Length: 237
Image (cartoon, rainbow, N blue to C red):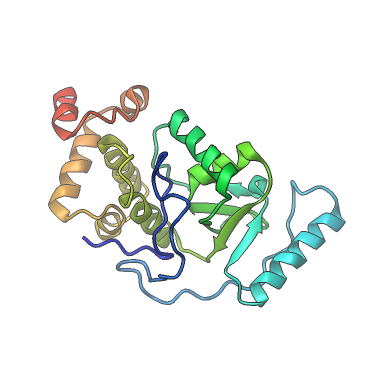
């Protein structure tokens, strides 16, 4: 299934990948979710972890000005950004993250992350994709470049999964466990298929296999990048 990324080529790949060299020119709607997204209105005043009231007001005003001028890329405080409500990784590869940190230190953050206004907490945001870039910027310090979109839960998980499909560093069990987690949260099979870029039969096999494995066992073993479906089926058996 062809991948349709909202903001063009954009990956978090390991060292030597195109993680920070993708283009933002190719903007396309989400696969199977191509109803138009409204441009976000002025973002409410930043709250909680930004310090003084005057600082909050200034940061909010700057953000509103950028959005009102039609700029889609804004600078956010990483402390205001939360992870996606459905994790797709079992752990972050330390070596790969260190390589990404050095890459951003040398060349800057070339590709923004995608966030939505947090559905439950005013003034905060939730990542659709770019978790490793967010971790790298937190280690480096400073603000992070982001695109803000008012995504529904369905649009968030589809964009999150489609971005992952462009990468090769998510293991089989991470993709499979992600599918199971989405189903447990009540997402339809169509949404999960769009997210993972798999057909109905493949998705059924993935969810059936993950359902046979205790969560605690999957989490204890971790990504196991050299283990494919056959090896995991042997564990399940």
